[in-house]
Amino acid sequence: MMTLVIHPQDKSTDFLKPIYENIPNKKVITGGLTYAQVEEEMSKHDEVIMCGHGYVGGLFAISNFPGLHHVSYIVDHRMASILETKKKIVTIWCFAKNYIQTNNLNNSFHSGMFISELGEVSYAGLSNVTQSMIDESNSCFSEELGSLIALTPKQIYETMQHGKYAQLAQTNLIARYNFERLHYDALLNVNAI
Image (tube, rainbow, N blue to C red):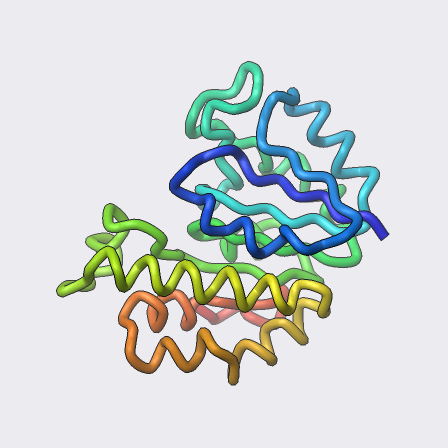
């Protein structure tokens, strides 16, 4: 089984690398390909992991792909028909849940709004947040998800409910906010945040 990882190169999301770094059979795309080439690669793989910055419409290209600007999408609604055929999808970007639900994709583990840097804290209405809290949350989340990445989306979700990130969420405001916004499968989480 081959896993495709789409993680546009961006220092602010390097903390996500532990999610996929130990997967044995993977191809990692960080930039340099056209939209059509990424689409072609996606059609060749059984599982797809997509990480970085994004919004409800998809995963941002971060100016790493020819012809696409910083907030152009490298993964958008046009790829949904390919993604719906995959054995497993993992999407970690802000509002990935909306992308999953809008495109009616299942067999996925995904995030809602996900705070990974100080600039995103005000959106969540949180206060008294420090960079060290964010760093601790980012590290714990990525390491735990990386240790569970071979499981199904449902198994990842269920295991994380009692794992290290759940424990950190008891004392870390950022981890609590993000933890409450982890989901699996579009149809099972229609009313989730």
